[in-house]
Length: 125
Image (cartoon, rainbow, N blue to C red; front, side, top):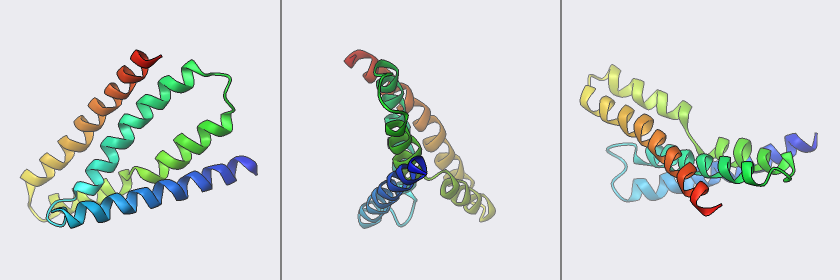
């Protein structure tokens, strides 16, 4: 039960951060294109890469710590279900250029950010 509570706590923190990021993004031009979702996915991808290296280097840390940060915070922060719905909305409305841009930014941008997170993490260890 302790593990579930840590995941729930982290998920709440991550979801609140995602909400704040989306509000900030919308206030700065994100109402035309869902930049908040892109940012959440790319930032989350970077952070999961960084945490991957951190947890490899610090294997003595409690598994609850990983559950809190990765499953909880990053699980609540990243928005892949939202991403898929927004991508489908672009496609269904015939906005194929926006759909392709959105897909590329999230998938390629997320992959590059994850790779950068691992690279930064490895260089810091």
